[in-house]
Image (tube, rainbow, N blue to C red; front, side, top):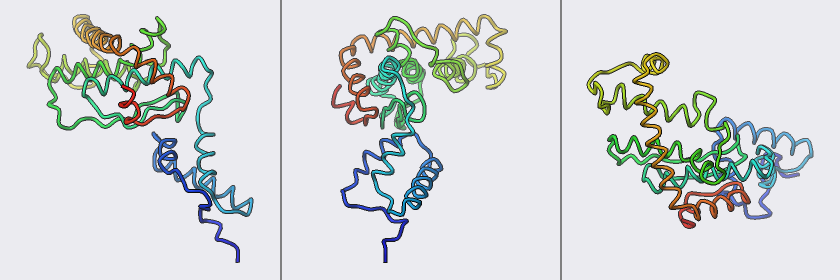
Length: 241
């Protein structure tokens, strides 16, 4: 009797860690769908599913980027990764490019940190560090840091608005609380609030730039590696730092 078609052939030892890295950022539903599709294909070919099939499917799912875009994206993501580590905000799990989108850093926020104003400003600096890395290396930045509601610029702005309107960190009316929806909408109406929020963003960007200027060599070295391999673990990044 032939081998059941739903099993995975193990003629070669699987590199599960590599497969896990390739799948970084995917949801459980994404992986379930991918395995189902690969299994269906192998069944049609009347053979067992292999680890190589899964690796191929994950690699095919990567977004194909030009060399220039791949290099810029690597710089952007490594900027985030270095800032997270150096500012002690989060532990980097993986940094990747071309997987599930242009690029991403998967991190685990430090739960032991008191959420002070200093913590908030360092968090904003980490969010802006990708864009800041582009400015440092290329002298300009692409629109990818903004343009949508969960972009880097949107998240950084939301943090700065929170500091000024509901976290008690503002020098102007610090005890006054404003709701989330209301305070965001007020940015276009309240010029003074917009100025205070922008000042926070500029201060956080300066923090990120100072950090990355001191880490410029590491930024280029790690980004070069990421451009070549597509995905790196936090441990690999820390080693290169």
